[in-house]
Length: 99
Image 1 (cartoon, rainbow, N blue to C red):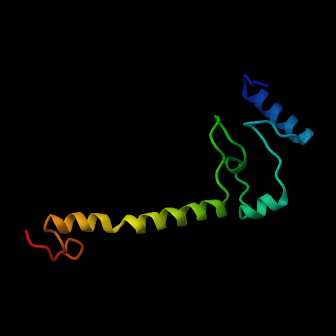
Image 2: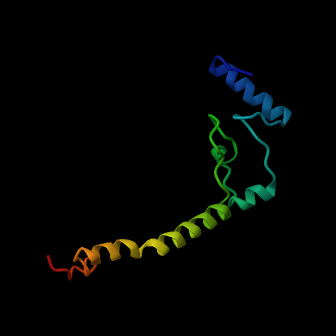
Image 3: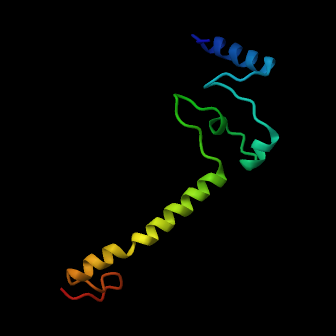
């Protein structure tokens, strides 16, 4: 259902709320458990995807991905040091290198 004015939009939102039904890109219905998993954040952007964007990740999932990225970074963090050491900048992190 496409809205052409603010009044139409308000009527549409009222009807969705009154009928207690979700509509893609406009509204959704969540469970208490979903709200709890998201620290009771009821921001519509957390639950209603707009413009065909992916919905936000649940916090637990985002933390797992963050930990994985940090582990990957630590695994390759030594590589710049190795290259700079070969180029004669062995103490570059501490400022103890010689030109």
